[in-house]
Length: 88
Image (cartoon, rainbow, N blue to C red; front, side):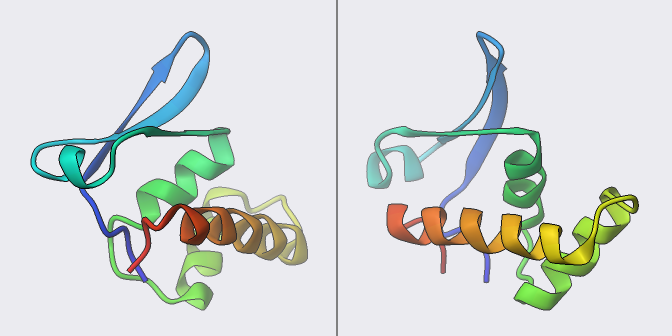
């Protein structure tokens, strides 16, 4: 799975947001607000990854965190992205 649109992420007023750019800005009108972990997941999804590959990458970024916690965080965030219609 990967992002359907081309996004850039930025910090605005202390919050991390993603905004579609170029032609995709017309297709996805709005922005996505997320925390630091969400931003890591979001940026990983710029490449086509399976759920397992995503969790493996998160384990590299957060080696001190339990795999079950990382898996839950990823699943919750993926659900939100799916509901927003931004995943392929």
